[in-house]
Amino acid sequence: MDGREDTASARFACTDAERCAFELGIKLATIYHQFVGTPFDSGSISALEEAIARSIRVQPYVTDAEVTIDRSRIPEDEDVYSYVSLTGDMIDAKVTVSYRGVTMRGEMRYDNDLGYPLMYISKKRC
Image (cartoon, rainbow, N blue to C red; front, side):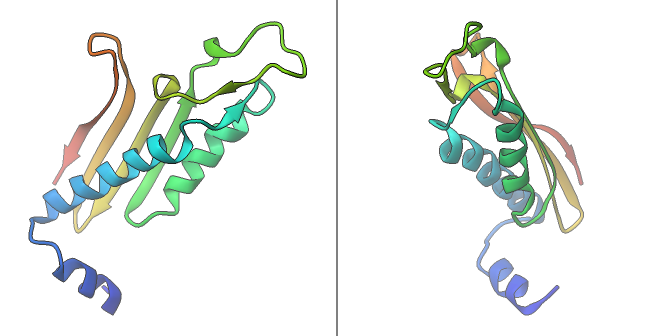
């Protein structure tokens, strides 16, 4: 571990598993709050998915990130004015974070029962 990581870690009053969960929550919230509102169309949807995933992968402790956007929300008869803005209910994301031997996968997807884009830990390995 380098000096900067030692300095950062010393500021956290929690276990390694709690820190891993914290980092995972930050990454999922970044996807939502950074990208909701982004305009896209059928020609740019794949690039947007990859851009979101890549932006999360560069963050500390991220070992994997996948993002899929609900294509059913794009108008079928597109013209020069046809685009949509990304909303939370369109995003399906999976992010894996590893911190000091703890690995967790978190997911964000719209939950119809809750009427909400839920973020949650779906797998944990300590």
